[in-house]
Length: 331
Image 1 (cartoon, rainbow, N blue to C red):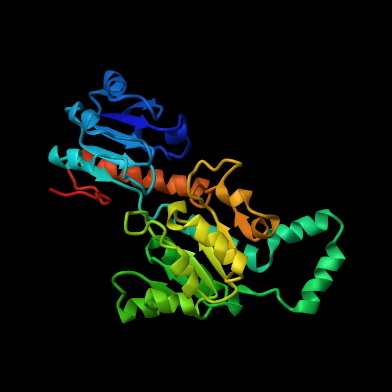
Image 2 (image 1 turned 180 degrees about the horizontal axis):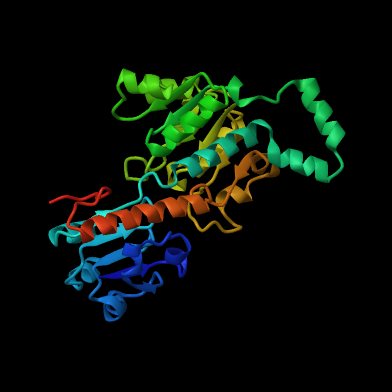
């Protein structure tokens, strides 16, 4: 059996723990961005495709591979795959749901604590010889906070938000709210230590609001001017999901008005981020209240190893005539 890998060279080998099943597979690895004809020429007879989560797997490619049985995302996303074409040919489409949950949850906590302790500005203070003045300022004002002092609202409550809730409890956070379209059972809420609130109420009661939604036409710019208007004065926003969830102009207005104390963002709208990005062109008073990271929440080595373990489990299941555990389509 043959595997076509579409993605970054070396990923498949780097993050795979080999087994006898994997060893006996023929593997062809090609970069993202080639056209269907090039993939078909190199590996048209492949039984399986493993693809970068953002790599287009087109209907033309799917229909041109007579032996194809499964397409597996290397990550959680699969919106670049033609699922309809795959389903029409009874080809499973799978993703690695949950592979990066703990990693992204850690990034969310890092941003929360980093904002509460004003990490970026404090680093700059020490580097410029202002350590004592900065320290005394905090002691005089009494405005450094611990995470356990805060209420936290999670907008969206999938694997990552649930992992974030678990870490928040470890930090001693007692008020953890969540919002999703279909609330959990009371038993599940008690087990996870969370309380459901309608979105408007969650925004009004949370010191920190953390976004954990997928991007869709319905969720684009979820954090808009109306969203920020409902938040507590001096609260914090965290986004480790997708940049498109936040209206950048509304975010700047919220920071300028003091409605938001800070925003911690692992992802921005219009990636890859360039130096002339709207948020980076703001006055210093706005920029110093943005804690940014380059969309690294989910790219730990452990995340990729977990992901590839999922990939090979699903491929082996199909090779043995079983339904893969992580299929997102049915027929």
